[in-house]
Image (cartoon, rainbow, N blue to C red; front, side):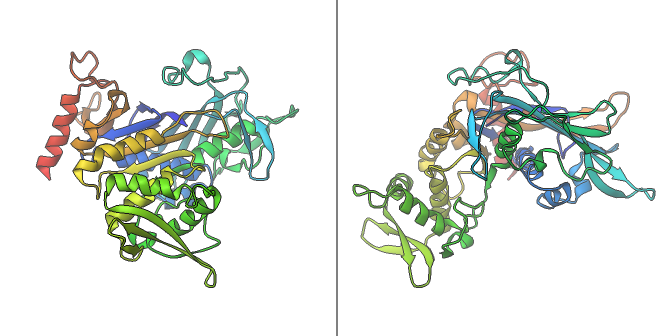
Amino acid sequence: MITRIEIDGFKTFQDFAVDLQPFTALVGPNASGKSNLFDALRFLSLLAKHDIRHSMQGLRGEPEELFRRTASGSADKMFFAVEVLLPRHGTDSFGTSYDVPAQRLRYELELGLQIGRDGTPRRVQVMRELCRPLAKGEDRARAHLKQTKVNYTRVSPFIRLNEAGDAIEVKQDGRQKHGRPVTLSLKEASRTALSTITTAEFPHLYALRDAIANISFLEINPYAARMTNDRFEEPLLKSDASNLAAVLARLKEETASDDRPDGVLSDIAADLASLIPSVSKLESVSDITQRQYAFSLRFIDDLSFSSRVISDGTLRLLALLTLLNDPDRKGTLCFEEPENGVHEGRIPALVRFLQQAAVVSTDPEHPSFQVLIATHSPKVMGCLDDNEIVATDTVSMIAKGTAVRTVRTRMRTGVKPMGDLLDPEHHLVRSEIEALLQRSVDAA
């Protein structure tokens, strides 16, 4: 689970930091930076698995456009830092188990834009990378982790810059591993050191990579969600929900019992019926001869409709509830505008599903699941607890010693129903957020 993210030099972010809860709602008008924060998380997730070039191709804009741009020029460096909570134990992709004595880690990454002699961008490379354990006294998330037993261990950094500043050192970290660190040159570093960790030979870094790589984004494509799937589809729901039929088939097979022949599909149908009362049953259909999976919905008038004719809004809700009810879910889910396609009267129930799905855990049998949503809906905000709200907006600044005006994204926590604003840069009251949202509605 990610408890904090810091960004500088990426898109609209300058000296930015925000603390994240297990369930966090980014609330603010359009163009206030909500999607940019999700882009930053997406970039970090891609960088944990791929090289920089491939990772940047998965984002909106050309590589040089991802660096912060102002009237006075563009940044040539971008910085990210995340603080994470890791499970105590785990198993890597080859079945090797590992232990994580230090469960709170801070990971930092700096990328630089290299300019050619002709003044055009040539490449983006790693400039600095660090991973170290967090000490208990500096842990900003202790307040909402107080009901979870967390281990803190004083050890040297797992990733650090060497003394000469021209290479990254990766500490030997596994059981009975006390050799010299692995050294990776920064001369033309085209990928992060973290992305090279693929086994439990480096347990802390493997667990960290797993946590960052498992940031997922639900961007449901109704056309894709209607498709039949073959039996070799991915077992976990894809971002566009194009493997929804296969996931439903897997869930039924893995969770069915004599008492509950449909397994968790019954729970998904019940949740969907609380949002769309006419729904009575969710059916997974397997075609043995064609080796394909499909699904259908049955309604209270006993009419059944295949995925081909189910409405876009219903498919969107079904895909979300399938993911939330999947026992194998883990990591961090980013979901924009959950209110889309939902009747206003059903929004409170939808928000409750999202809140209840978020779990803090250090038990690998029941892993943490974090939910981040982005919304500009006053109705959604009205369903949120104060501590779940991160208010987003943009602020203008005049660069010191110049007349150049710049705009940056600001996100504030510490929302109060009412009261004095002792620190308006970091805290605010609900009425101010409501005014921001209302201006967005009026502008539209």
